[in-house]
Image 1 (cartoon, rainbow, N blue to C red):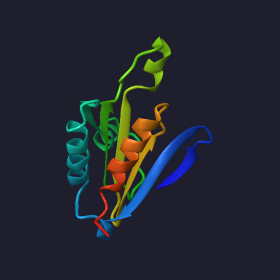
Image 2 (cartoon, helix red, strand yellow; image 1 turned 135 degrees about the horizontal axis):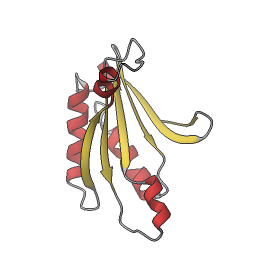
Image 3 (cartoon, rainbow, N blue to C red; image 1 turned 45 degrees about the horizontal axis):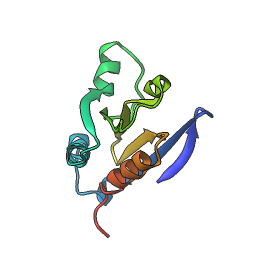
Image 4 (tube, rainbow, N blue to C red; image 1 turned 120 degrees about the vertical axis):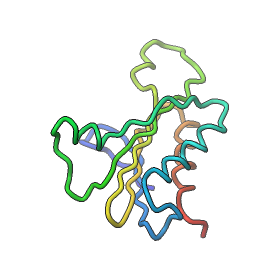
Length: 130
């Protein structure tokens, strides 16, 4: 798992998984595996799946040619609401892009360490057991 700044300002966590490193063959299978992790966590509320690829294609937007599919799982940990400004960083999202040979999975760092720990654990669980 890489930690880096996207566009020099957004702290993200990113994992690239070769298709041979995961038991899942298609993006939707990885998405269902992440949904299952979120569904069993009592602190998590699933919200939706956003088909970013479909949306971008529909509006005639630009898509890098090797991206085959791209979706976001949208959910919220939201165990506290101490400040109205917290709404700026909620809900959370894990993005999955499918390329011909690999999946690229990413999420924005959360202000809550426990949320980062759980999302990292969920994403790393998509790999085949060692």
